Amino acid sequence: FLSRLLPYFMVLAVLAGAMGLGAEITAGEKERSTIATLLVSHLSRTEIVLGKFLTVLTVSLASCLLSAVGLLIGVRAFGGGLTPSSLPTSAVFRIDAAAFGWMLVVLVPLAVILAALVVIVGTYARSQKEASTYLLPIYMVIVLVGMVSMTGTATFRGAQFLIPIANALYVLQSIIVGDVVFQDILLTLGANVVCGAILIFLAIQLFKREAVLFRS
Image (cartoon, rainbow, N blue to C red; front, side, top):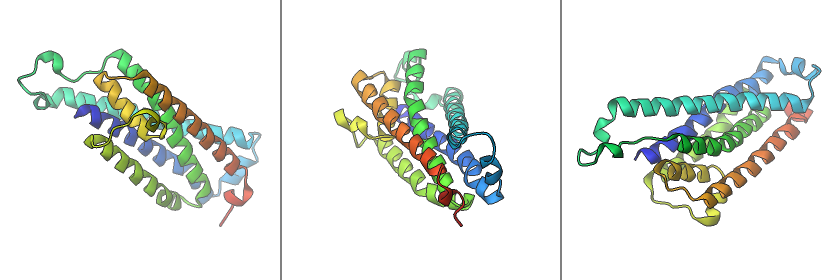
């Protein structure tokens, strides 16, 4: 149960952290009319976008890690009833250092995708409210994908691990239960790194368009 619940909460925490700040430092600047001041600085458009992206990425990863730690502490403190009494003490849910390291490796490209996506939407939107409207369907799709992964009704095999975001959920589950297939991790990382790079490129190109930045 926890192997399915924890990845779901971590992905939602990444997205929630990115959405809150991403809309503020992109569409929020348009709304406050401070974006023109930023554009006349000595920084290039690419540097501005990368700065915003890295800020969103850092906050989203911090949000994810804090949520995961909070959930694990809660399970340790109050989740004794989740483990049947018939099981030995060794069966209690735990994550070792190696598993935690692999989880970080999978989470970073996923956070890159979501952070870049939020920056793109925020750059296109004219206000924070409009950005939130555009981001809501994205949030709902990820929630639905996460719910499907939690139910265990769908399984990923082979080329299915090339599907961004969903692949990370299933790989995280396999890492937690100790059933890792190295090929699946490679496919997931390859797909998510490529997808993240494309989204960062699109965010930079979008930020270079005056018609987008100053549209009314």
